[in-house]
Image (cartoon, rainbow, N blue to C red):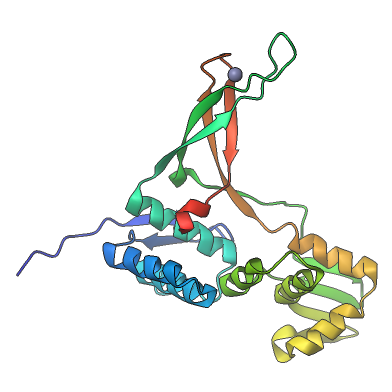
Length: 241
Ligand SMILES: [Zn+2]
């Protein structure tokens, strides 16, 4: 019998709550599943496979990929992929520093991005409790992976904005009573949102347009003008392909 090779184990702090989780990298069989899903072009299939593969690689049983916020899943996926296919990628930037004659330098310079250094941008001014008055309080949550990915496939419409807001409300407090959104249908919730004032709606939208996002900070030097650049890289799309 061939040997069973031990796999490396890594840990990562979940961006949403700082909880430490352990994982192993993707294996060839998992890359194969992801590739097949990507080929199918079916977004439900891609989402299902992504969640399944992440679940396979997670070594802690108390982490549920169904309920984790979408950016935790994104972060886990990038970390697992990075440990599997390589952590650094080279990206070219165009130097925008202004030279003596007043024009931008425009020279290309390479920056090495270390994907294992992912950091999270989180606006601390955005609270999950949105209080309009003593009788009306919204308790918000970060939506799960599936709902966000399905919505991202569609255009950037007002309908989409409403759907993301609905997916982000956990509970509503009104006149001594709590209402949990999971007890209501999408139609009921949609109708409810459409009957809010514009001011109330904007306050909820402020929460959803400030979801945490992640980036990698990296440094590079322009060969032509010598300027040292610090760039923020946030295009992780190729890691999902
Ligand atoms: Zn330059």
